[in-house]
Length: 85
Image (cartoon, rainbow, N blue to C red):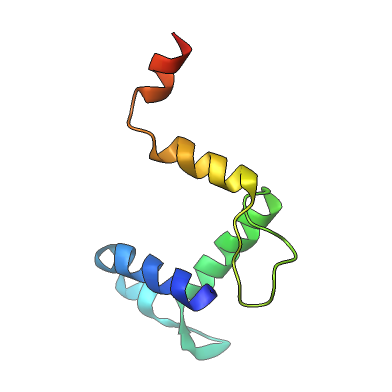
């Protein structure tokens, strides 16, 4: 669910968020800027084929391509190079 994803994002990014990131957006005084930006990032991930475009509202669902990309990004540095040699 979106709220769980955003909570995990916050926990990981809390120390990096600036005062500006924490300010509310003009259109919704209850929505901090960083959360709105996270929603825009989700849209980009959908366009890139990494998240499902037609998942149930409020659910962020990863595609198979997204799982592959995540696995690639989580590989220890140099692991992919060793496999190709």
